[in-house]
Every structure is written in C-alpha cells, then in structure tokens.
Length: 112
Length: 112
Image 1: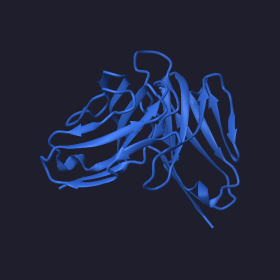
Image 2: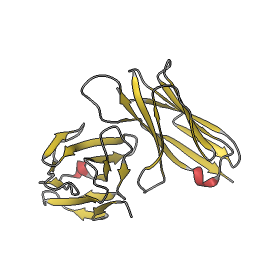
Image 3: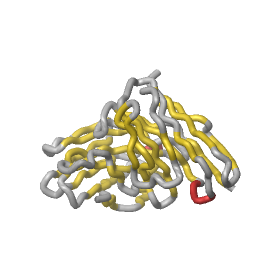
C-alpha cells in the first residue's frame, strides 16, 4: 500500500529543474506533498484531490494523474532553500483505512 | 498562532524508565496522530485519535500507549522504554483524517 517515490535522491545546481514522482498501486483519493528540512518537522506544500487537478505554489507545482495513480511534484528554477526531503502522503478511495500512507521520501540537495 | 507543541524536544533516558511526551494543538482539530521517523523508514504512524476518547493503533503501536481525554492534548506514553524506541517522534493534528496535517517540532528520544 505504501506509495513509491522516485527518485530516492537528486542533486541539483541552483536554477535547475526537478520532478519527483509518487506512485500508488491502489486508487488514490488524494495526494499530499510535504517538505522536511533536516531535524525539522515536515511542512505542508500542497494537496491534490482526484480529478487530475494541478496546483502551484510559487515555483513548485504538482499534478495528479488519475489514470496512472501517480502524482508528480515539479520544482522549477530551484533555489538553495528547496533542499530537503520531500514526502508524499496518499489517501485511498476505498476501504476502511482512511489515514494517510507515507512514501519513504526523496532527498533533494540544491548546490550553488 | 496556530500550532502544535511537543515537550520535551530532546530526551535521553534509560531502559525501563517510564516517560511521557506531551502534544498539544490549539486549532480545535479532531484528528491527532503520533509518528516515529527513523532513517530510511520514513514516517510510521504509532497511534491516532479521531476525537476525544477515540484512539486506535497505527502501524507500529507496540511499546506505546496514548490517551485523548481532551481535544487539544494527545500524550504519548512509553511505559518501559527500550533502545529500539530511540527515534525522532512527531505529533500531528488535522481537522479530519485525510486533511492537511500540521506537525509539531519533534521530540528526539534516546533510550540507553
């Protein structure tokens, strides 16, 4: 049930773009994206509900592909402050289990 | 300011000495949750609570207890801590299960 995030790690130079994927084997109801800096609490970025909507927050945006049961997080023109670990949390359509299930995270390092 | 607070932030203890980590939220959220985070294992849910006096096991409940006597508080109790409970612990709250989760700052626990 745990969503699979890819890649596991990515290293960028400032200004480069990155895509992080979150894939599920079960039908998704929603996908939540969080960023966690080392030693700090995860911070909410955005939530996507089924329906294929795309959301954006400054230069970070995300999409939800219902056919593929996958969400992608797009980081455009990366900044040093984007460094951290990105987690997706997924909620499923059916069943009694309504809680979020978390991916293992993608470590992103942005270098000058 | 809307927030989730945890205390203590850091704790070093010895095997078998009972301890409590407190969690409090001021957002009137119904859903509260405890996670532990270990390298390479992501966020694993220990216990959650849907409302006052309603709690249930998460994925890794062994060795932990919780209570929810008031809506704002959700303490995590380790009756007899063991070294394998050394971890980073996060409390989180949200309006409902599938909603955005707000995390506390974390408690780093070391059991010797």
